Length: 209
Image (cartoon, rainbow, N blue to C red; front, top):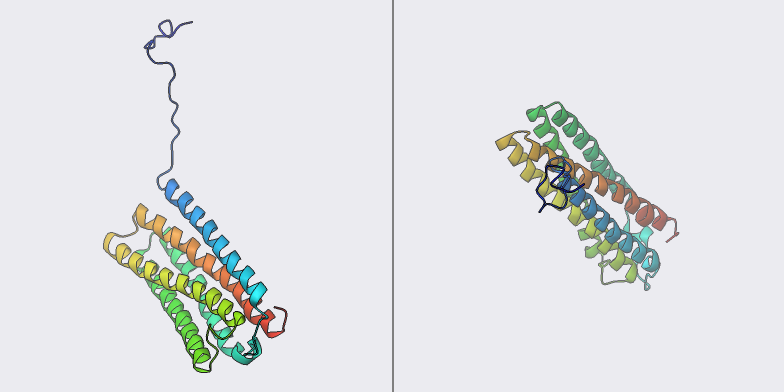
């Protein structure tokens, strides 16, 4: 049977059967790819710390520079921020703009507290002569923990920007997608910090690394 017999233009050799693509699907896929690439970066930093974490060069050891009380407070700030972001997402699902903005603001404050405590820790270590140039242990420590802190700072700036967009345009579809992407990013940083807390601080204090 020819194309003419089928009532089709003989110059058309096939009919494209296009599939529907949900709005924003490419954005979410692209962000998942970014998360995976970031995971590789942190994996390399963890591997570097595992190799260099016991090279003290006669300098301070983990038990000499880490304050577990301050670390516990810092960890609590980030864990609480993940909980409050979850509340923000629940409010978004219920299309409640004001509670969404309120919970995002609380999340940003917890994130700022986390970064502030981390900067306080860094400045105290440097003041005591335990800067990143002192040993391979400290170099790998500052690189890993500092990279995570930089990501948290970027997340806070992104969150503030989104808050301004939601306040201006409401919970439109585009803003919902952006909040979903930020949610993945924020919880990803929480998971990474659990790894840092365990490998760098706790195992470092007991001399495993």
